[in-house]
Image (tube, rainbow, N blue to C red; front, side):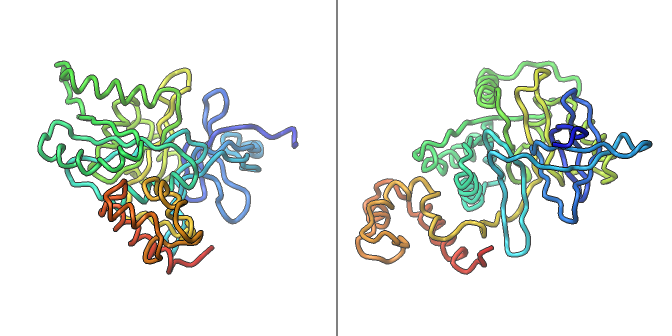
Length: 317
């Protein structure tokens, strides 16, 4: 190994640039070597300092092996969120109504990388919408996904009143689930991601502004993934991700889809044919479970049908 190489952690990326954190906590701008940027947030890298007069910049020489990589892929491009994660937190809200299709896509992507998932349903204070949303999440609780109720509210300037007992309990439960882990926070616009990040990383807005300025990326509006340390000991990290409208799964082979949906996977091994598509074959245990109401809901099966049709037409890379 080149004795001039230094280790570091990628904490954000923008175009051809990335910010790398040294072991002592200081950060510097780095540029990946080569034409294609293969560096993502969460990567452990080896970098080489620039020439004299450019000591505040470096070049990424090597990306160390990853434990996992959470990403999505559509017909045009691949979007990598982060690497080396302990879990993914999917934050959704009672209002606006969350998309079960989008939630399921994120879960499939996480299952493909064997990354544990925590689902948090925000806006518990909106009783009727929350009750409806909580009921829609019943199949996911039945699949043994951890689902937490939360009521995340931004603290107004000068606000001093204490949160209600239920709100405090929700926060404690969520904090306990995040403790000691690197968590990617994923969710649509309006779900409360920024409120969650700012709750445990009070300087997040200022930090992203400084990073944005360093990367010459202009106004920061969560258009890139960013790593935040929550505690001084650096044992707990939150990785903020940009919102998304679509979540492509074109990197998932269609034959693997059912095995990445736990409610279907629980029955798929008992099908008569080893290559059963779970759509029309005789002796299919998945469709039998659907008909009997035994662990496969109509809504979840419809999501499977839609994804199966989509992935059957997707080009393989």
